[in-house]
Length: 295
Picture 1 (cartoon, rainbow, N blue to C red):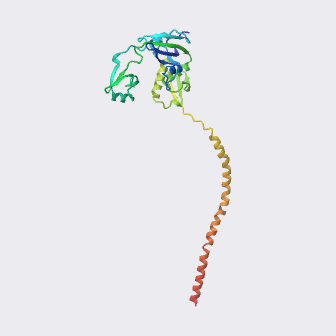
Picture 2: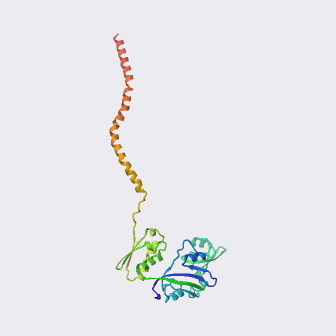
Picture 3: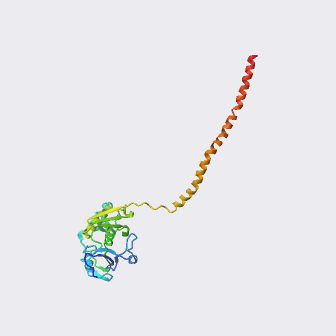
């Protein structure tokens, strides 16, 4: 069945610039490696979109409407139907020091940076200034898409999980658990997402998306559950050994108090025998002194 605006889709594509034949974007890992645009921190796979929401160039979305899932088509888009024509007014000269402070990186021609909340491309560097271009990197280019509608999403949970993944791409969407009761939706957040930077903002964006595309959802709650970590499998073995030895120690402890007094008597006898010699000598001296006085 042909797709229409408002459908939740998974789309595969490869994008080339007509003027140069250069591959600049793709959803396929193998194509990215062949074209030398592969990045280790990039995630490849079908792109999730809601047709008509502007998540793809306008001309491409118009082309997709009416296509059947599973068919691969090639479409050429003029700059007006792609990312627009180049606007000279979006070129800026930024002092080098300010550029470093705001972007946190060194200016290199061709580098794409975030500057004052906007995406820009460094065009040139010189005389203590950096020329940046706020036009889209593909503005003014004729685009060629090889595109396939991979799947039309029908299941509500699958739609919700893909919306979550759109805002929190760092965590696999399958790790989020969903519980819905009438108009209330609870999203259980996995531990991997607890300390992500900007998580609270992402939650707000997810809530806005869900309430926009699912009119029957009034309340969205995020539940963070801290579960007990599983014990190390080696620990029970160590504990078992300690348990086997402990009864013997207890038996020894019961026997030792009875023999303890016997050990204590031996040093007492030695101390008692040592002072007897001087006491005998003293008694003899006193006896002699007594006999002299009597004399």
